[in-house]
Length: 410
Image 1 (cartoon, one colour):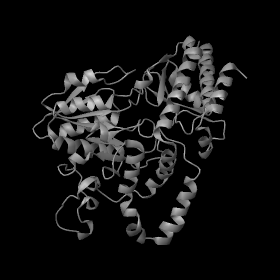
Image 2 (image 1 turned 90 degrees about the vertical axis):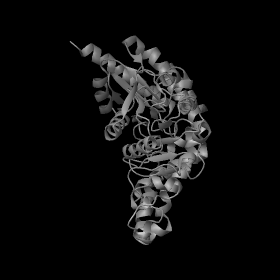
Image 3 (image 1 turned 60 degrees about the vertical axis):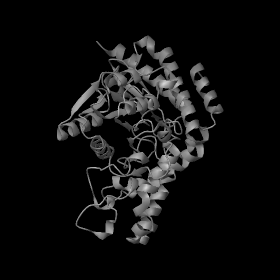
C-alpha cells in the first residue's frame, strides 16, 4: 500500500460519517465518482420509496392523493429544505419548476419590486443560465446589465460589488458558490452592501445547498434559488426551490401567475389574486414524483447536520488539493479553486491543456469528473457518498492518464 493510500485509509477509519457511504447506490463498486456537484448518487432507500408511491399512493389513492398530501408537498418539502439546509424559518421556501424558470420568476419579481431602477448586476463568470435569464429580463423590460469582471479561479468579492451597486441597481444576481472555481462568496457582507444601495439580492445556491451551511434569514437575504439534484440527490431533472424572505411576501408579484398560485385555486375565478405568502411563487401543478428522492437525502442531512457535512467537505477538498500539489503539479497541472477553506465550496477545479481528452479517458475507466472550459477538470466531492480512498484512487488515475497522454503525444 502506498503512503497516499495509507493516508486515505486512515482518514476513512477516523471519519465519523464513513458509515453513511454504504447507504448510497453504487458506493460498493470501484467506480470513482467525482461529479456529485452535477448529479448526486441516489440513496438505496429511494427505489423502494418510489415503488411504494406508485403502488400505494398513485395506484391506491389515485386522485385522492391531491387532497391528502400532494397539493401541500411544494411547501412542506420547501420548509424542510429551508430548515435543514438554508437557515430559513417556515413559510419562505417552496419547491416547483426548474432552476431556470424559478430564476426568471425571482429576478423578474425582484426587478418589479424596485420600480424606477434600471440595472441588474451580475458577474461575467456566473453560470450560463443565470446570465441568459438576466439578459432576457433586461431585454424584456428595457434594463441594462452591469457586469462584474472576475478572476475565473476565484469569484465575486465584496469590494467589487460595492464598486458597481448604486441608485440605479434593482437586483444583484450572484452565485453563492461559483460553478467553475468553487469560490464561496461572502454572502452576508455582500447582501448588506446591496441593501445599503437600496437594491435586492438574488442568490443562486445550486452549488452550495446541501454542501455549505447557509443562514438566509440571519443574512437577511431577499431571494434565492437552487437546484435539488446535486447535493440534495433529487435525481435527474428534480424540481428546484425558491426562497423569498418574509419581508417581501406581500409586495412581490411573480410574472407567471398560474392557478395553484391563486389565493383560492378551486374557485376557478375569472381573475388572478395571488395567494398570501410564499405560495404565490407557485404557478402550475406540483412535480410530485420529482420531489420523492430529495426527501430521503433531507432525512439524512437532518440526521447528520450541515456542520458535519461541511467539515468533511473541507477535508475531502483539502486532500484533493494536497494530492494535486504532490502528484499532478509536476505534470503541469494547476489549481483553479481557492486554497483558503473559508472561500472554497465543495468542489475543486484542476487545469491542464489535456484535461478535455483526459476526461474522456477517465470516464471510460469509471473515474467520473466533469470538464469545464478552459482546460478545467472539476472534482465534485459529495461528503456523505465520497470516501477519502475514492479521492486518492481517482487522483492517481488522473496522474496516470496525463502521463500517458504526454508520452503518447508525437
